[in-house]
View 1 (cartoon, rainbow, N blue to C red):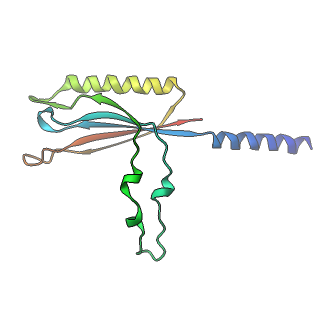
View 2 (spheres, rainbow, N blue to C red; view 1 turned 90 degrees about the vertical axis):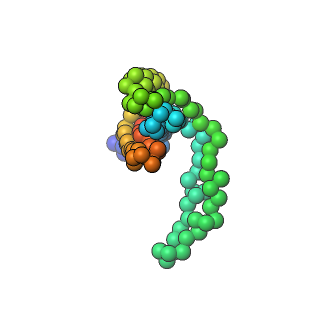
View 3 (cartoon, one colour; view 1 turned 30 degrees about the vertical axis):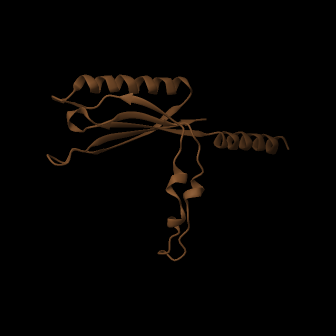
Length: 148
């Protein structure tokens, strides 16, 4: 009896730990638009959203009810936005701006760690300037955090 009670308590503790997990994503968008005219930000959502509201089921592989989902209902109104500097200035790549952004992101990461958040994954991507007629480009990094 003592053994089964102990196993039950251990299982209950482990299950409680799984249910108590929280996740957070911090998104860093850094502009690589020439002449420094882009916008660079660190974004942190402060809202919760139910993904079921945007989820539909396909029954035959082709019919989709996604048209019934209103995109406006999916947007959150509450988020933190931290201004960052753009990678390019009028003279080209601005290394001081890059170092400043690194310091800002490092400060945010240190604060997240101090609040008990554990960095569990990083994903990065780039849509670079496609040449003379493009004038577009961003470097995006997502920091995935977990708290138990």
